Length: 413
Image (cartoon, rainbow, N blue to C red; front, side, top):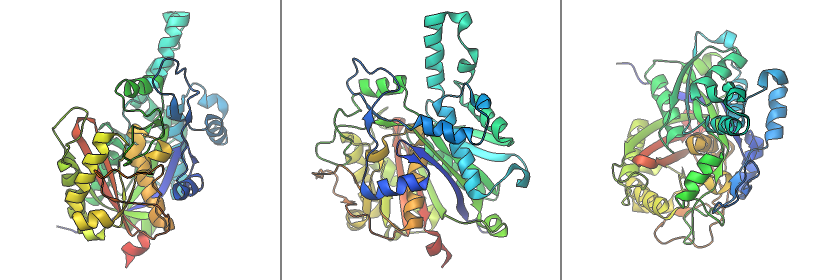
């Protein structure tokens, strides 16, 4: 049996409420600057919370209109626009064109409820204008399949699409599935990532569960009270190392391992002992051929809900060992961009690649009184040169996903 292919990252498309691309995100990650702001996209009257993380839609439109005529973008909502921008940016960053591909490009992209905003707007039109005058295209675009078709059409890029939906572990799961495919030699290059956006339905759903905070998002803090929902798209170009070297691609980092598990404990709460996430971390490290002592940064799921943060902390300590678990720098960047749902694991994977490539640690924002139930080593100072980063995601239904990535300079030695 031949050795597994090494899988590298050669392109990135990253968009959140903090901005577009690495240069908008790295300073905020280093400073611990949050994008949380009052929601203006829909009316929050009567809601328990009214804070979210909205992208700059005007800037998004301007960027897309520099690539395509405005008429071709008409009718696309913010969710499809975010995905379109992320895919186009990742391909451009990697220096890939449709003409240089051997066939349809594998695209493993994840979302939880995308297209829901199109459905919301169609329903509002039905209520206000009647069924016959409501724009049917909105309803058609309420499916991820339609969004994939739009991307392929606008980019002139034949795709081999696969849509992943694995609760809040979706983004990590999408990247992990393409990683496994390339690693076993079933593909040489592809797109992987996740996307979701802030909508009334999604905000109201989490608000009714009491998961959204009326204060600030403060992961691992004793007074934590939940998260805010944010727009997000994170898309990566993954390639086999051999193909990347043959075409002289710039390598941003290496994906070295992936692990997944299911708790089977509760529909919305994680295993309180962290058993599921511990198993996923152990599987990830085993697939990478590395021990716990190799990890020197963890981008935690860290939703700032009491149950998640305590369970995740226990799981990390179980998987890494008490000493390592208390020593390895940890932060949750949801304090900065919010919970981007299906995009979260992919966005946070982009953050890991940036931290490894540019040599810094994303700061844990809004942490003033660490909870004793979360005895980890939280990042206070961005100075550092991590070599291997874990990216952990936990989701409803007990879904767990973990990626391990390595700094490319370190991986080459």
